[in-house]
Structure formats: structure tokens, C-alpha cells
Figure 1 (spheres, helix red, strand yellow):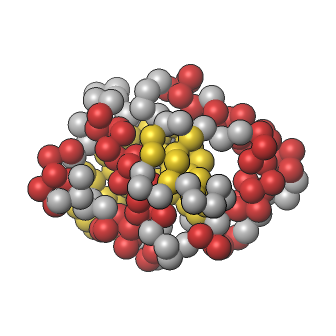
Figure 2 (figure 1 turned 30 degrees about the vertical axis):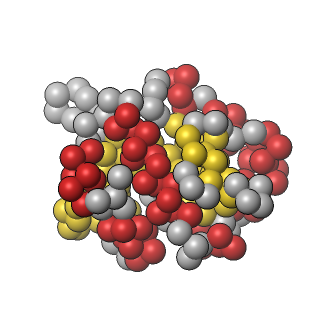
Length: 184
């Protein structure tokens, strides 16, 4: 277990999650938000490989980084994913900024899981020494904008960002900001 929230366990992915990972990532309405060049997953082997990659994030990057399964405590269903990972390019001082992200299976959206897991991920990151965390998303990803605002992140607006191709809606927060917003 990485951390838990009121309704979820956030944990490492397991190979036994491969069918659910394939189900989530074989849907254009999910993967279209995940990358500059999104690709729909078509084979279970891809899901197994992706799980192995996600499981290795902590080993490669150290605490508190990871991309984890979000599991409903009541039903045992894996509803999606939450992550804390570095943005892809270095800052001028050689450091990397950390981003929080999330994506869910469509049958699990609209129930507060993304908000709950992302809030937990922020708390986890700050408890492990992060001082600020960003969230970047496509400018028309209205559901994720709502989540970022609901978890108390400051909306920095739209920017042609240095990390991904094109414009992104950029959000930012610190532990103190979340306390002031009453999120933690």
C-alpha cells in the first residue's frame, strides 16, 4: 500500500491488473488526454509491459514518485490511476518539477475518485519532502480542470509550456496553499 484515502487504496500495480489496464487504456476517450501522441492499447502484453514500467518508477526516480493503481475499498475494483512524476524537461537550475495526474476508467468517473486520490497523492508528496506540485492538462480537459480546482490547486492559466507540445492549462500548489484552502 502506498497510501489510502477514505474510499480507496492507492497501491502498486500488479500483473493481475493487466486486463483492467488494457480496458482503461484501450479507450480513446481516456488516452487522448495522456500524451502528446496518444496511442490506444490493443494487446494484453502491452498492459503487462506498462505495469512493469509503472512499478519501476519509484526505483528509478525515488520516493515519492510513482504511478499507482487506485482501488475502491468497498468493491475491490481498480478504478484508475494516480501519479506523481517529474515533468519531462529540466528547469534551468537542473531540477525537475513534479506533477500530479490521474485517469480513470469511464465507469468510475463522476464519483469523486480522482479528487480523492489526487488529494491523497498531494499529501503523500508533501509528506515526503516535496515543496510544490504542478498539474498540467490539455486546455479542453474540463473534467481534470474541475478536479484540479476541487483539490485546491491554483490555476495559473493557459501557457505554451516547456514540457509538452502546445498549450496546457497549468495548476500549482504547495502544502501551505492546501492547508489555507482547507483541503488537507
